[in-house]
Length: 86
Image 1 (cartoon, rainbow, N blue to C red):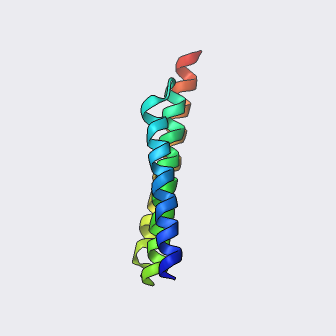
Image 2 (image 1 turned 30 degrees about the horizontal axis):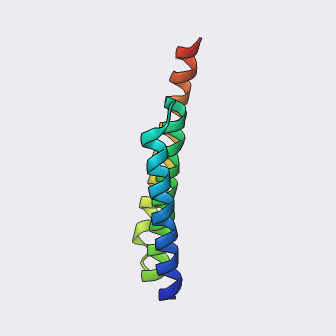
């Protein structure tokens, strides 16, 4: 189980670095929003790996909260961005 957790953590870290580059270099606001939403999803995946590795279920409400905040934030930014384009 330790090897699987380490490999998952390394892959999530690599994905976070690549996504962070997309957030910083994104030419458009919507690219940055998608990148930040992806970072939130990677954080949720990291917390899930930690919960599976440590057998600790106390982080599950944090995962749900991150999902709600990520969705509401992306929907709000997209809604206001589309309204400003008109």
